[in-house]
Length: 303
Image (cartoon, rainbow, N blue to C red; front, side, top):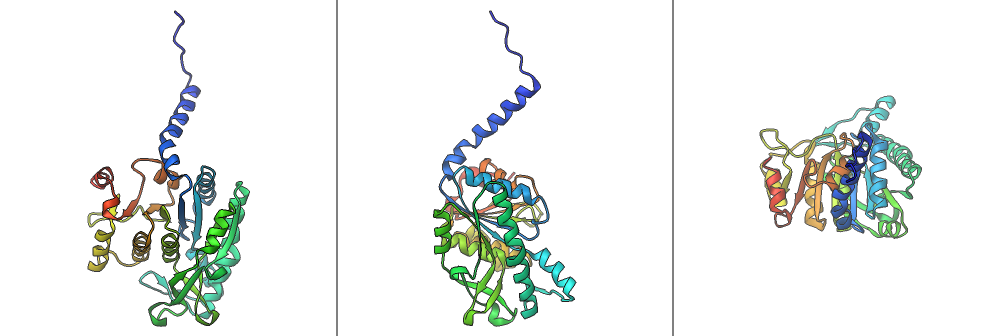
């Protein structure tokens, strides 16, 4: 009888990689052809942006339709400081007067959007840069009656430019500047914009890459799964406030508007996107209609 083959360390490492691929196969099959809206927050752009881009390219390569939405808060802060302008925030939203709006467009449309498009193309993807102004993609009105200056709240989405781009094999990369009355440009919170786009596209998933582990309960534990009615109650009671409010509201809007699920995950974790999509437990917080959450997913929130 031939002696059993003794596996080397390298052989075992290769087999381990193959097993990871086999584990991911059901998820690859499930999500092929589905639309996923990924919001890359300004807070995560300074981390491993190249790693995030490669993960997005991988998702596209295995058949997902990806729409990227980006903010740029830290870069805007830095430019405003160099210009001698100050920022102030109300419930996580930046007050935007005309000089600040000019800086917002310089950063989002002039610098970050081309940077992301370039990185995607450098890694083998076909990407196209858009802003919410292009094709009337994001139609907005002044938020809170103009109390925040040129901050817009989304009142309508023309998703046709995204459908055209996706049908042509492109990854749309959207800078969150919206079109308001009298052709006025408005600063739109990137979380809100991503939620509105995910709802309009009836996306399989909205994924917010943030700098927090997820939505936490009163004891500081991350909630792995939450129902939309549960979250609405938490917002109404004031349990969710400050900078977390726009993120949670965006997820809620997406799910209520037609997206199947929404996720808040920590974009500082290497391969966070892949861990969320291709593993059973995932990371961060998933939001869905209560009836859409499986018993296994509810059980995870108790871990």
